Amino acid sequence: MRLFIAIELPGEIKRQLEGMGAGIPGSRWVPADQIHLTLAFLGEVDDSTLRQLTGALARIRVPGFTLRFSGTGCFPDLRRPRVLWAGLEPEPKLDDLAFLVREAAVACAIAQEERPFFSHVTLARLKLPAPREVEAFLARHRTLKFPPIDVREFLLFQSRLTPQGAIHTPVKGFTLLANTASSGALQEN
Ligand code: 2AM
Image 1 (tube, rainbow, N blue to C red):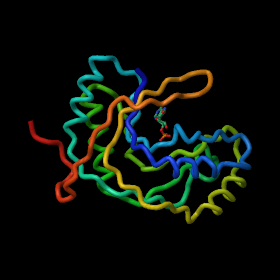
Image 2 (cartoon, rainbow, N blue to C red):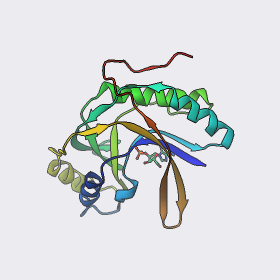
Image 3 (cartoon, helix red, strand yellow):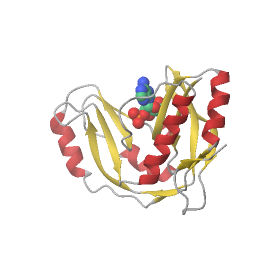
Image 4 (tube, rainbow, N blue to C red):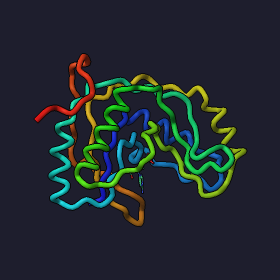
């Protein structure tokens, strides 16, 4: 199975993010049903590794937290933009969660990127260089804001690649701690 781990976003916000895309040549906008906040990309995972991984993910202990959208940006830079994204205000609990999720993947021998986690929601991938249009887009959405999102769980998703595009299906959800006083650490035993 081709898998990734992500935080699901409210449907209304996904529809608004999807609707932002227009007027940039060579851009492929992520459809609402594929918009999420990726914590880790896993790639192909066999059944026995999947069992081990779900056990490791279930042992992660991070309190729930609130996500706040903040502005837009692009990767790798404004000169050659390839990915447009919506940004999020810094949230240490989200960083803890991404760290622990990736650590769980590595413990199951699933390779992870060396690059540190940078929280973002991918909106579009650009096939052509369009720096001027991208700059106008970023200026237009500099103050992007949505109501805060209470995050109570993260999800393991299957991504099936089809000629019509990727189909994402939740495989299993993992509930975050209700107690906001505890810190992001793996439970002992
Ligand atoms: P991103 O949009 O945050 O980059 C599901 O396919 C998600 O996994 C994508 O939204 C993408 O997250 C990430 N992803 C897909 N293919 C990937 C790859 N080859 N390497 C790293 N991340 C990937």
